[in-house]
Length: 214
Image 1 (tube, helix red, strand yellow):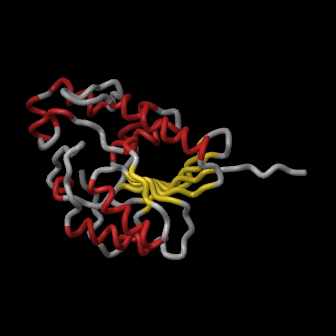
Image 2 (tube, one colour):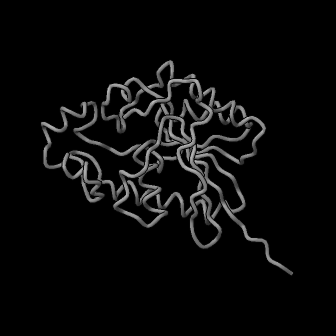
Image 3 (tube, one colour):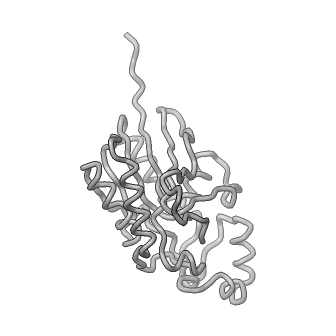
C-alpha cells in the first residue's frame, strides 16, 4: 500500500496599503489602518479567492493585517486566528521615522540595514534574527500540527522577506525579495523541506495602483 504524503501549503499575503507605506515611514508595531486604497486592495484580494479552498486564515494582530485578513475569512467562510508570531518587526526608535531621518540619525545601523545584516538589532527594538526565529517556530508548528491543510497567512513585508530567506537557507538574500501590498506567495512543505511555488503574485490588482511602495 502506497503511503499518502501529508503536506501543508501556506499562502503568504502582505497586508494592504497604508499611508505610511507611501510616505516611506517605518511602521513596525505602530497601529496604522489601511488607507482607502488599501481597503479596496483587500476587497479585491478576497474576491480573487472566491471559489478557492482553504482551512483557516492566520494573521498578524496588527490592524492593517487584520483588515486584510477579515475579507478573506468572510469570503471563504473559514476561521481567522491572530498570531503574535506574525507581528511586524519591532523597529524601536526607528518607528514613525522616514527613511531619510533614520539614515541621518543612525548611519551605522542604516548601513547594516541596507546590507541585509540579520544580526542587526534596531535601537530600542528587536533584531531581524529574533523575528526570523519566531517565524521559524510558526512554520514548524504548521508542519507538526496542521498537515494536509491549506492556510492563508497575512503578515508584513519584513517577516515575508525573513520567511523566504529561512526556507531557502539563504540568510544573505533579504533584499532580493519584493513583496507588494496584498501580494500572494505560496510555499509548501512535503514532509522533508519547504518549496517555493509562487512569489509576489499581484494579478488581482491589474488596473489598480499597485506600484511598489515601502
